[in-house]
Image 1 (cartoon, rainbow, N blue to C red):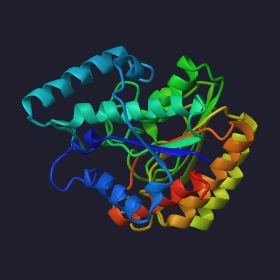
Image 2: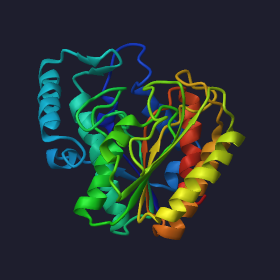
Image 3: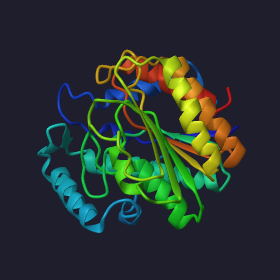
Image 4: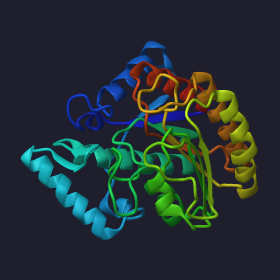
Length: 311
């Protein structure tokens, strides 16, 4: 099993201010943990390229892409931060980081489809799953997974893809982009009520949303995934699976109140991988979303990668 990790130093240049949970130290914690436990000796490291505007427009409107491009380029040139909403702030490094994050997802998709690697994890930031067709929000600017999934469909010609989202927050941006698209099945599990206070009523029949209350434990989450996700995925038979890998459902995370641990993330990854082996030639591209308790994030990413790599 050949697994690659796509990342770039410029993803750490995006800063949203002192004390912001979506911080550069997230990638540092992941990288240090993977090096310490020897994971990087067994996983191929690849540099994330810059996404093109054409890539971004696969998931976002041309007007939104142009408007956000102008804003981020202006902030990059001036060095003066600009708040898009109270939680989402563009800094001098945001533009390049956002292009690297989306570019990683596209490059990983191509590498997997071309058979260069079996699967990939994109250790990138900013995250993406709250970015809608025409709005940045919730720490997100461009929807990395959505851009990659549309690339697989529109550019690489796959007939069907699935998106798996286990972030503690509902992936409202991804749902907004793909609701009603019969080529895409999105399965998600998330805490409710919690930002962005959506997802309980799916926007399309191609959405399998599983909302759970605060303090839900791993055994309950596994049972729900088995009953709802796996059945839906088996019926859909995706040709490729994309993962919005948010690890903020961990019991130590400060932004959520679910009670998952590393073993639960390993189990979820294993079940999704089994579906991918059955229907999608094992093809998976996973992109980092949330996860704000640094030690728990690093440990959770490591077990996610171990399963992807078959270790």
